[in-house]
Image (tube, rainbow, N blue to C red; front, side, top):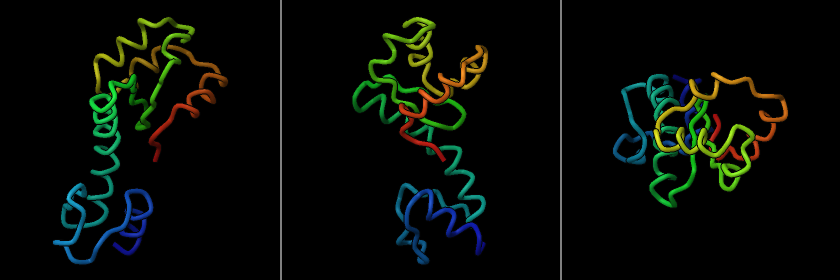
Length: 118
């Protein structure tokens, strides 16, 4: 527990010792380790969905990272349809991404679109 509480705070924001004072967005499972891993799993999915709803962004979730693609969708080497199909499905696009070989340049370019990465 001494390890997990600071780690949780580092990634997800401040925590409170009193359970009633914890932020409502924090899912408390009775111990810090379980709560940490639940947040780590659910937070990117919720963030991607919220971005899609808020500004109808072209957002993808790949390997636990949330990417806001902006106008890159229209210059994607694999074509617009590939990305828009993945965006339209919502959820995790890791399997679709891993079906294709992406260059080191593509991976470095992805970093500029990342809005959430643990």
